[in-house]
Length: 204
Ligand SMILES: C[S@@+](CC[C@H](N)C(=O)[O-])C[C@H]1O[C@@H](n2cnc3c(N)ncnc32)[C@H](O)[C@@H]1O
Image (cartoon, rainbow, N blue to C red; front, top):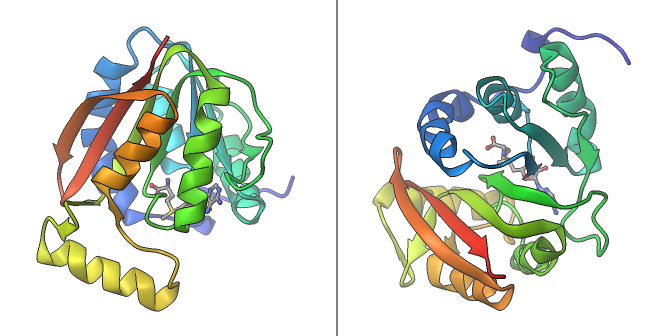
């Protein structure tokens, strides 16, 4: 594989801001977990940070094929023992290219995917969760059809100018999809910059 330094790779300033507050929760949530699948890992900054600082588990990043090359380079550069080579995973594919995990993590993806893709995501989730596994979702949400802040409303408008299928999702709609998938909501943490960290657990 071609070598590229991290400074040549796609970079998210938002990841740098949110990785510490997310990690604070992951430390507690993932205490008894051995394996985590990350869906839509993007630049890989979260994967590298969380794998380094949660050495008791293996972190399995994934993304769609367009992002896989640069994600793989960041993972390679990081050379973290418990960070696995990323796999190609598109939530719209009926068979995901991976096994079962103690937790599935995804950040800032549900407002990027179409509604149909979010539905597919929740349909596939139970096939990849071990008993008592958790689903941990980070990002901005609407509640009862309302934006929590004007900045989230502006963000939604901006997303839709880029792709009309994108947009902040209703917490209630996402919760209904999760319930249908056999998941129980355990936590709804408020996070900095008007984001949430939603945590579900699969029923027995
Ligand atoms: C805004 S980026 C977030 C990346 C990273 N998780 C973060 O927090 O910076 C959205 C991610 O969702 C991924 N994504 C979009 N559609 C997807 C799909 N159908 N299946 C899996 N991932 C998808 C994109 O490839 C991208 O990595």
